[in-house]
Image (cartoon, rainbow, N blue to C red; front, side, top):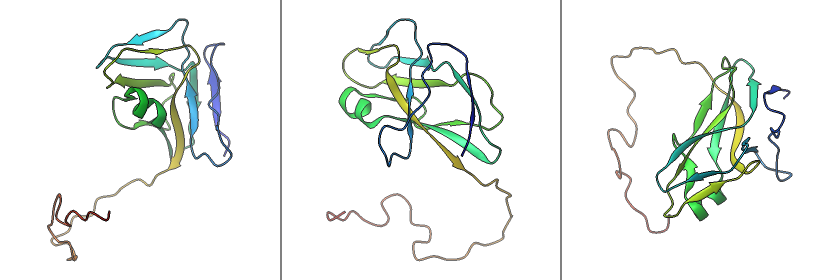
Length: 148
């Protein structure tokens, strides 16, 4: 898939796959100076890039697992969605859930992106829904198997 990208800042680094079979590309911070995030601080970290995502696709922005488990740096909104009609700069919404301050350095790999197809939904009103084995069972209704 080819995706148009506009470099908004000459210091920007294009996202890139880090391994041969990686599904997502790492995103780099485009900063003039380091940003220190104290515990529970939130920040929008610029990337210096804007994208033309094809119609029928979305760009998902996800946390990097190493930053999350080692330092508590993750996404404020869990997973970010960039819609096909957005043309502004990609900003990564980070939060420090760790116990110590963390420094985001210029050009640091801070998140990852994945472009995926989606289907638009058309709601169909129904009087009844088909029965299933689970039925109305909610949270924890399938039990807690220690083997899982």
